[in-house]
Image (cartoon, rainbow, N blue to C red; front, top):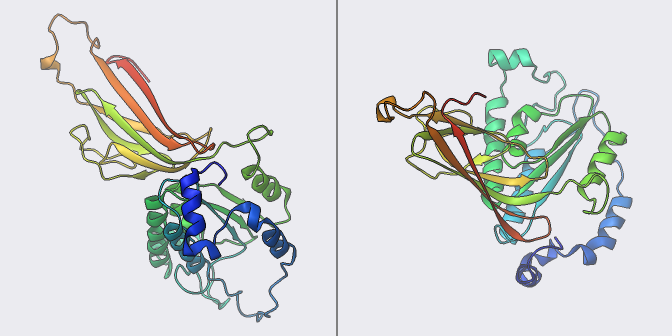
Length: 305
């Protein structure tokens, strides 16, 4: 990324992984040539079988390669997964190649009659944990008429703050325009404003506790006396990792009021107690700057909503 610190770029240039990763300016011609020369897979597929796809292994290799190549938190990293069908080979398989085995349905999931679901979901969740640890984001573009296994893979998108798009074909304008927006500049219309490596921390006053967070994040194991016993969403912490975030990223934080009425002044009006909150967000801005944002808040004990 052009906004990455100069020291990080110099270190990446000298690393052995340079034969896999290099600045866009040096790789642009080779990348464009490779894209222009892409052809349909020449290996024929039997009419009784699905195409061989090792999507899970490919995502695992991409996550491991980027994690080993780039210093954590020093640049923004996004993996773009173009998926045209379900994974049928290797780790993360969601259905076999044999067409006699039907793709699982919602009814199958409800009945727990899905032979590959639990194992595939566990695998993809492990890939998600690796992405979160390095602050990397996964975006999924699924273009197929049939299911592709998004139920198994959704944890990688949700926990890293990525984007998921579903359409019928890669020639669809929805896919083309959505992909184009990821690369638009700040001065261009439709700019998303992707930032990365965010950490959100909530510091409440003594009479309020954090129950959890709902949204595209992953919990960080940071204990505090301000954690509620009842867990809602991503609970049991007051700090979360936002591997990917943009100008439209929204999360909801649930609180539990624990104030004891006996501690209040007997002469005070009902609901007069005041609660205070501090929201701290550390992240890497799309310009490459490391930023810290603080948002204080307060509300009365009798406020509704």
